Image (cartoon, rainbow over all chains, first blue to last red; front, side, top):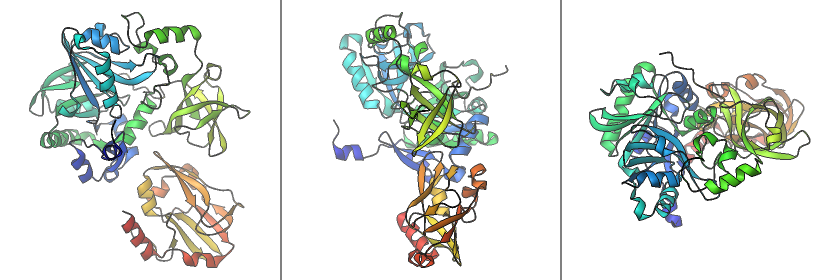
Length: 381
Length: 127
C-alpha cells in the first residue's frame, strides 16, 4: 500500500509542537510521532501515579474516528462489530471489536451512539487505515456511508479521580450526570457542541473530549485543562504511562493481547461479544471455536522472583518446556510489582499456579493472579 | 550535569573510578536520563569475572532493558546490594550510585577510555 518513503514520514498530532516544547521524549508509535513521557515534569512513574491519585492529561489525537450514518447505520455497525449496538441508547457508548471471519481481531474500538442513525467508532492509531478499509469493504453502499473523520478532532483524555473536578471548571455541562461509558455534547473551553465522553484507557475515572484539530484551538484547550488541574497536581502524560495504566487494568492492546491470530474467547472478551444478536462477521467461527474449547487463554502473572517479564518472553513450566508467552509485561508503578499478561493453556491457568518466565536465559518464578491487577475504588456518592 | 573529572567513561555510558587496583563502576547521568525511571538492576555476584566491553548485567526502566558493559576486565569484589531495593538511586545520583567494584586484572586497560571532557563532547554529539 504505502511506499517506503511514505511510511518513514511520521504523522503528527496538532499538539506535536507543544509536546516538543514541553521536552517530551518522543517515539514512533504506529507511524505517529508521540510523547512517551515528559521527563521535565517527572516522567512516566509520576505520570502513572498522578492518574491513580489525582489527574493527568493525554493527547490521544492519534486515535482514529469513523462516522457511520444513515438509516442503515445500525445494521452496518451490528454486522462489523461484535457487541450489540442495538442496546445502546443515544448518548451511550460501549467497548466492542471488529473481527475477521476467523473470529480474530481487526481491532478493538469504542462505539458511541450519537443519534438514531449516527454512530461514532473510535479506533486505534496504528490500525486506522486498515480499520477504515475493512469497514468500507464490509459495509456496502446500501448500508450507508462510513467516513474517516479522525483528522477533524484533537482528542484529549483527562483521567484520574480528579478528572471530573478539573474538567468541570471548563464546562457548564453537569459532569456528575454523565455515567461511565456515557457522553454528552456541550460547551468546553467556549467551544460549543463538544463531545464529552466518560471513557478512557487507564482503569481510572475520566473523560475524553473531542475538539477541533487546528493547532491554536488544540493548544488552548490543552493549556486550559492544565491550568484547571493545577490545584490537583495535574501532569501531562505520555504513552508510557498510558501503557502501564491500561496493563494494571488488564485492558487489551492491539498487537499484544488481541491480534489477527487471537480469537475473542482466548482474549477473554466474552462479555463484549453478543452471540445472540443478529449475525456479524466472525460469528460462525466463534460458534465453532466455542464447541472446540479453549487451547489457550489470557491470564495475569505476577513475578515472585526478581525480574520483569516483558512482551514476547516465553512462559515455561518447571521442566523448562514452552507453555506460553507474555503479551505485555512491566513493572507496575502503582502496584509496585512486576506483572504480565500471558497466553497459556487452561491447564496452567488456575490461580496461584506456578510458572516461569524466561528472562535472558534465567527461569524467573511467577504465579497466576486474578485480573484486573488493579481495580479502582468504588466512588462514594 | 558535570561529569566527575576523576572518572573514565565508555561510549556505552558507563563510568569507572580507578583507585589503585580497584575500579568502581556505574552508569552516567546521561544514561539514567535517557533510560527514565529505573526499576530494576541485575548485577553479577561477588567473585564473578567481567571482561572489558562485555555485558556484566542489566538495568531496566519501566519501558526498556539495557545491557551494562564493563569498562575494564577483572573480578567482582563488591556489589551495591542497595540497588536491589532502591534502583531509583541511580536516577537520583548516577555518579554516586555505584554498581560493582572490580579488582582490575589489567589497570592499564582504562587508559583508552574517555575523559570527562571527551565524554561530555561525545554525548553532545549523540544528541
